[in-house]
Image (spheres, rainbow, N blue to C red):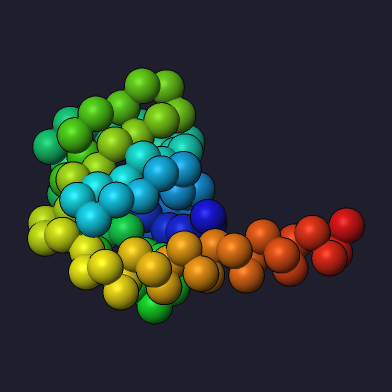
Length: 90
């Protein structure tokens, strides 16, 4: 699912590969040290987080506070809608 990561005063395009109430795994071209404070922006949801690990383009975040189950469900629904739109454009 496409999203943005706000870090070091910039806004960077990322892909959410895995999402849970406590964190996220991203595909991110930006190199960020462990412990960096960031904000994950998914359109209707912005959540503060800390970088916990990075391995190449893969980046793991731990949210400042857990996502509510409704937030997770809304993001999953948004992801499915975006995927369906992308498939109809091909």
